[in-house]
Length: 355
Ligand code: ACO
Image 1 (spheres, helix red, strand yellow):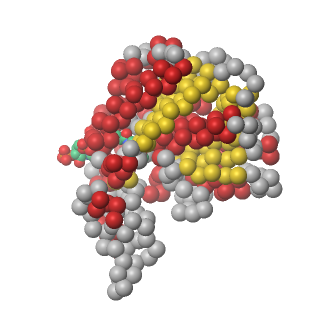
Image 2 (cartoon, protein in one colour):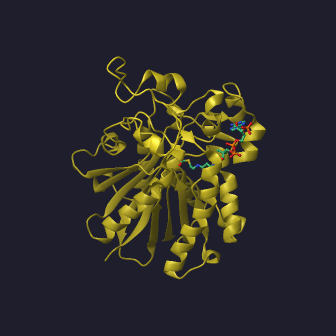
Image 3 (cartoon, rainbow, N blue to C red):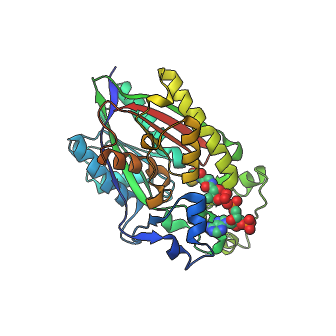
């Protein structure tokens, strides 16, 4: 049975830097509030009408493919994780394939909708496909263009200030060498699905949010007021076409689930937190990462954080951070690297890699 290793990684963030002060021009917030509660100092926004989630993903992918020393035509499967796809459908996987110019090989493309833990879910799928012998070179991309879908009024400030755009990619390859991906752990609990959600456009018809006990009336289409596909005028008027997050609720669960799922992976392979050379948490909030670091007893040099520069880039945050740490020489051959994420769903997971 082959092992799977990360043969190449890359990232791309848009050039446009958006400071906290810039956001104060649109909403009632302050640089101090954002820095104090989240650690974020600035984020990147893509150029509308020029860049998309899949075009950013392609930029990161080209770097990962080149670093793996293969040609794009040698990729034999694509996995794309995002919550901000170019289109409602089809997903970004096929758009990435087209952007990379590798449609002739007619390889499979899979889209993943696991938000913040999308990259870890993708990594786990890639690992299984490689260990089963089905594929040899899997391109995994996590990319987000959040700036297209945020509420820039004060109403949306709790969500809008934390998100940024960017993309990260990894080329996962079959290897006969020891190490590589040691284990992945995946979890979910749909009980609180709507606590961190982007419900519309959607075909819920008001059903699921009522089940969750949320007091939202979307004004579902009637014969008299048909509405557009999945979208009603009431949704537009009342700002339901934006992400919804109960921040403190998410925060409390995140700081509980991160250590749990990291320890689960470490226990399985008989290692401890002190063995880690690098821990790369999903960049949700610097306070969450610091809490987890403390709980796990990790030193500063064992943890990579870059949320200060990029905000929360959801599915892209782990591969961006991993690529950055690797470029900085902080991940070397033989190092034990741990990835972990928690987010909307709720879904969460971890991965252990012997580099
Ligand atoms: N600027 C100024 N004030 C604000 C802002 C803002 N940007 N946002 C909220 N506030 C105000 C609120 O209105 C509230 O005011 P009030 O007390 O007068 O009602 C007060 O600040 C506190 O609001 P909270 O939402 O309770 O603020 P909190 O300290 O919890 O910080 C935050 C919010 C940063 C979102 C935090 O809860 C958090 O990071 N949660 C976890 C997020 C997360 O991990 N998400 C998962 C990944 S994302 C994904 O999966 C898609």
